[in-house]
Image 1 (cartoon, one colour):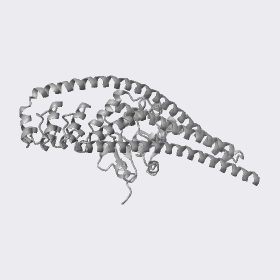
Image 2: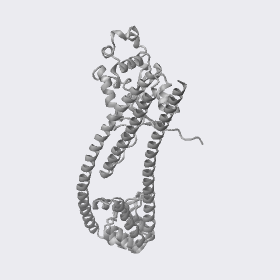
Image 3: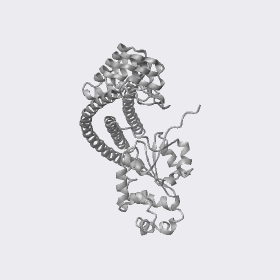
Image 4: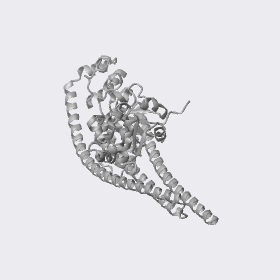
Length: 483
């Protein structure tokens, strides 16, 4: 008997070791992939910063050949990275480099004007550079060229479409601030109808390019929308599989616990079943995360194609240590004034510990037992009756819709009643109680504590925008290291 137990212990130990190694391998592969992606993005970001800095400096110094070489090299890199890069996308990237700006909103063309680099101005204008950008203090390239006394630069700017009527923040136009008599004469004699004609032609050319670009963007956005639809279907498929895998895991854990309690000598079999279910749940969780990232990347590409600004991150940011004041005490009454229940987005991995030690009724959305309607009903009644938070942990999975379905099985639109706080009416509260609940859950017993009831949703991944709108978002981030 002792020998058999020793063999069983070895089997269990080996099974646990293999399961752990498998999880470590998968996590390492995931981390290596993310690190490689980050390195590539960081290299591209630094290359872009360096390229912009060089373009601005070379423009001021009049180094036309070097600027042309940078542009040539940039185009080569863009097409090498994406061999299928459409000419319109290439033209847009080229335009962005031509009109790149420094911290004072000065472009290469403006820097060339300030440095008196007429050849550079002519080349940039010919390539489609914006002649009338507004830089620091409202100064245009023509203003800067006139201020610097650069005759040739002023002449080429006027001939290409530089507008002498634009005034800087101080109210002065190029003619006013010009100190060189020749420049003053050129500006005084310049016929602004020529400027209007040039600007009109430039506008027609811009509209032509914009129309072609709009057609291309629509075509590309339609293709991206199709890809995003497919990615969402893949994500939802993996999500359903993961939920089933977690249900199976909980079932196997229960079976194993029962075998251990009964003293069954074949517990290594049930333990292996637990490990197999654990591996499958972990694998599917990674697939869910990867497919979610794919959706987010496609959304980002759509945003970039449509030239939409990235949405500012919604919510307040706190550390775990600050949750006591922000979440429990609501110092400043921010949550109360907002009127919505909190949605906690955990980026620390420590939030579940805080929640469990805060006297809450906690429901794990991935645990099928926790999501049984009767279990939810009792947890909700208990939270109302004893004035404590009811917490639903989505476990990083986009499954609020499933949680809502479980709530609504208790009473139609129950989740909506919780969210809009209309549950605390006599009629609606009585609809979720049962005679067998006993006297402690009678209506008269909960009135004194109902104001202390709270409802929190928590998750470890970025929720969909529609869910963010329903809640007061609190992002729990790691506290900065102490100095």
